[in-house]
Length: 267
Image 1 (cartoon, one colour):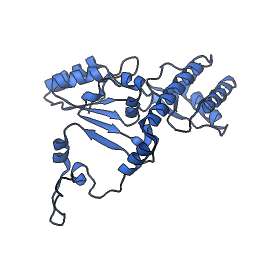
Image 2 (cartoon, one colour):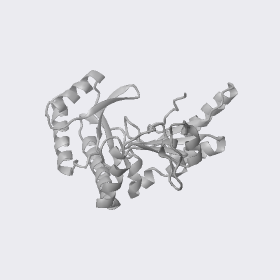
Image 3 (cartoon, rainbow, N blue to C red):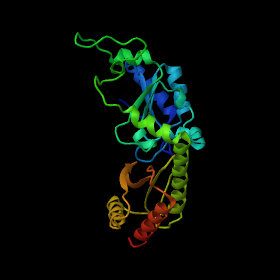
Image 4 (cartoon, rainbow, N blue to C red):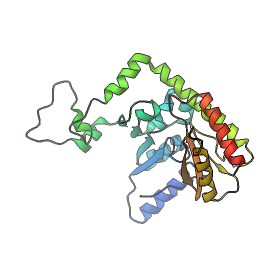
């Protein structure tokens, strides 16, 4: 496995990807898969999916896109712009329990070629019934033989509320993240190096050590009003705010800004 180098914006560098492929082939290896991200865990960045798809097509590689967090922003205009090229993937990971605000356990894999997916997972046994005419055998398309009715958790909310309700909610999260970034970027004691691609904002106290950064996180949590997390980015600890709850509204973000600003000023 190779971890592809990222550029200054924390996105996968397509030119470096090509160089890695050339090096591996020269060493007698056979690259076959490239994994791009549609919303990284630590900073929420979207890789240049179109450019990565160009490399995958040219080099004969399977392209998988990890869109577990960010994929459903495709419902919005800004999300479609950020995720341009995702439609060229061979497989895509999606988590409706994140981007559609639904109960945990509704993650899924989308595959362009259903027959390839089936060939990877289908097994036969004497105790299994034959396949019904006209109906897919869902156990042939994944590792589970038995499963609960997870699809109902997606179908019912969409049936009751329509897709516009989810699109509007996701647009609101994009707005809130942009507003949060602008507010934190204006605080002298803080640095927020990367404007969010989607709804995740990373920041840290300016000129601080990692230990001081984590103490700021503890101070923020002392309010007992909000909960943030931390993540390492390029060798430094950052605090991260991921706005992806249907209950996250502008009033809560304003409260969060005030708590962070006060904690940073008293550091």
